Length: 136
Image (cartoon, rainbow, N blue to C red; front, side, top):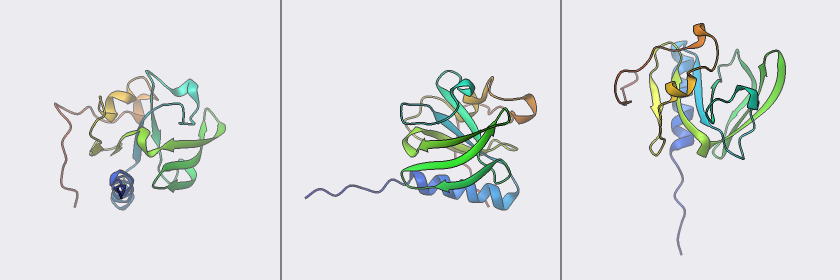
């Protein structure tokens, strides 16, 4: 009898989200939009979207093991967002660019931000390959 292994991805997403909250940073979620992702398509660029999931930006945020759900406003219009965990490219702090990029993803979360949002929302670009850093 085969057992399915529980993914670490939703736990890592919650950990970086909590670290951002504790440090006063804004958590951004980079998403590869697929058929199961419910986001406003007008804000999707090259199949990707970056979402501010900070407590001041969304309502009723639920970071579940299968998906991430919340309510958010885009251009003043309210939307219900559903992001499957499998669609998450990475999670990072807007202010520092530190966070996690998940294996098997073809691009960094910061590259997904190009052209998505205003200049004051764009975090500093990363140099070289993404790397894990110790968060204290």
